[in-house]
Length: 155
Image (tube, rainbow, N blue to C red; front, side, top):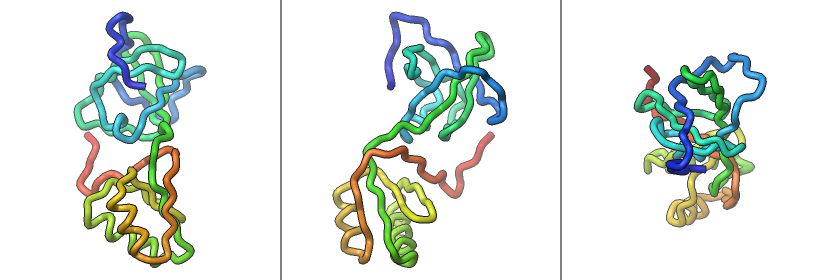
């Protein structure tokens, strides 16, 4: 949940930790795909603790990332928050590949898995997908983890 917690001092979260970092009880921070692109923003953890992300600009978080506070030692675990999505499936792998091709040509943010494609809801794209062929397009609430762009890199 995003919030401008001005009444309570937020814990400054200023670094990514190694995924193997051990913490007995990290705070859980549910973030949508769009929120995981915000490197400097105030959020509220699942238990109500206000945190202020102060990560290097351009940092993109993924489900399972561990973040830390240098000053307090607090550890936060990022979780992909379920959100409205369109999930595309097909019995035919070629049809699914064709759908990925057409969505890629439109620079759509897309999660690609062996058995499905997932994108943010868009009625025009939904109609296009239905017209492409043997695809099932389902609107649902699910975690969304889109692919990074081919030119995205980490510092």
